[in-house]
Each structure stands twice: as C-alpha cells, then as structure tokens.
Amino acid sequence: MPAPERIPSRSLTGTELVDLLTEGELTVLGQIRGASNAVLYCTVARDGEEAACVYKPVAGEQPLWDFPDGTLAAREVAAYEISEATGWGLVPPTVLRDGPYGEGMCQLWIDAAPQREDGDEDNENGGDGADGEAGEPPLLALVEDEEPGEGWKAVAHAEVGEGRTALLVHADDARLRRLAVLDAVINNGDRKGGHLLPAPGGRLYGIDHGVTFNADDKLRTLLWGWAGEPLTAEAVEVVERLGAELAPGTPLVTRLAELITEVEIEALRGRVAGLRATGRHPEPSGQWPSIPWPPV
Image 1 (cartoon, rainbow, N blue to C red):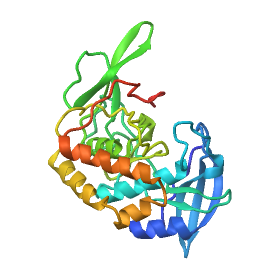
Image 2: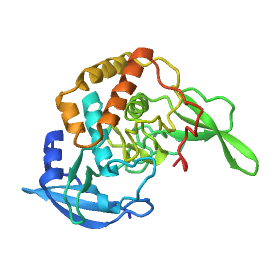
Image 3: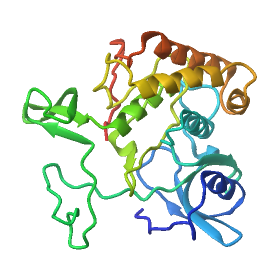
Image 4: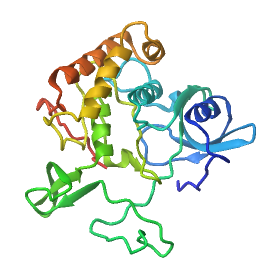
C-alpha cells in the first residue's frame, strides 16, 4: 500500500526513536502487499510523539527449512544491533515488541528519496523537478556494455529477454560498500535491490534482514562489485572493533544471545575474524547461486 509521509513531530535521537518504537501505542493502518510474510504499516505514538513504522508479527512468518531456529523478527533486530555496533547506522531503528498480533519486529518507516532515471541530469538549482528537489542517482542498472562505466561496479550478466543479455551493475558508492561489509558480517542471504532505501539527506538504509546469521555461508547479494578487493581503512577499523565487541560476555553479545543462537553467534565471530584475517571483501563461493532471486 502507498504510505503517506509521517515523521516524528520533532527530530528524535536514535535512543528516543528506539524508546518510541518499544513503548509507544502501535496502531495498524494497513498491510503492505507483495511480501511473503505479514508486513503491516503502522503508527507508533507516545507522549505527543508519533512515527510511522513497519510491524512484522512472528505469527505471520512462513517457516524456512534452512533457518529452523529463532524467528525472522529476532534476526532483523540482531541485524540492527550489528549495524549500530559498526557506527554506520545502515539499518533503521528496529525493536522486538508485543503488538496487536503478538510479538514481532517493529522498525521505523523510511520515506525513500526519489531516484532519477539513469542518465538524467540535475538542473542548475540542484534538482530534477519543478519543485527543485534533487533525485538520488540510481544505485543499480542494466547496461548493454561488456564492462561497467566509470562510477559503476560489475555484478553479473543477466538475461533481459529475446536472447539478449545485459550487464548488471551497481554504483561505486561508499554507502553501498559499507552495506556490503555489513552483509558479509551478518551473512545476509537476501540483499535485493528493493531492500536499498536512499533517504533524504544522503543517508542509505538497508531493510529486510530476516534471513541472516545462519551458521552456514548464505551470502547472496547484488553488491558483489568489490568481491576480492581490499577493505577500506574505515572497514578494517570497524571489523577490528567488532571483533572486540563480540567477545564473550560483552553487552553486545548479551543482547544478541536473546535474539540468535550461540552457534550463530560463534559463526558471526568467525566471519568477523575471517574479514580481519584477509582484509578483503568476500567472494562468491561458487557452491550455490550468489545472487538472490528475484533480484528486485
């Protein structure tokens, strides 16, 4: 369903947003269609503050044979915890709470900024429309060339019909590169194009992290453009810090233990240690499809 724009009545801090999502009154306004699990569009309100949010009740989850333990909702919250630990803030504020249909994940709604069509030029005022608002440059594209152009990274060739193929590319964007590192850490099995939300002000968020933290390698993503390349100095610093924060008994591990299994936490430590040891973005294993389907 198309969602009307709703924002908190003032600019809330991250902690205040988490408190609002956790303790506010949750009102269901409608269901977001097209998802394989129940996704409800809601508002959450408390003490005169209100925000739009997404509520995914555990009762509406479809069982997954390769994720027999835990819930999608808990893994979404765990992904938020790791995102916050990186300092990159790539996942919207997300909590586990009770709601009208039982326990579920509650996540701040992000009004994505409009994206201009590939090749569009901004006008002289920095906008691409009559209202002067700038559109975000595209993050993903299909191109006819064999090699990506400047500012793009190649992912894979894709069939586009009538026996033709095109090259799938993503932007060589520092925000996407951070998200690629986060996905490698949390073992994201479903990084699709529709899960990338550029927000006004230049922020980029990733959503839908229910199939993460598996103890087996499940990384499937559209962000393979940096595969095998050295991590940035910033990313190296982040994974070093994560390694320390994931030591047994730390506050982060205590929170994660309420969301995912000990086996999954140990596998998480192993992935972080692997990134620290290689200093490089991971590469597809070649043992299974590395790109999610459908990719959007």
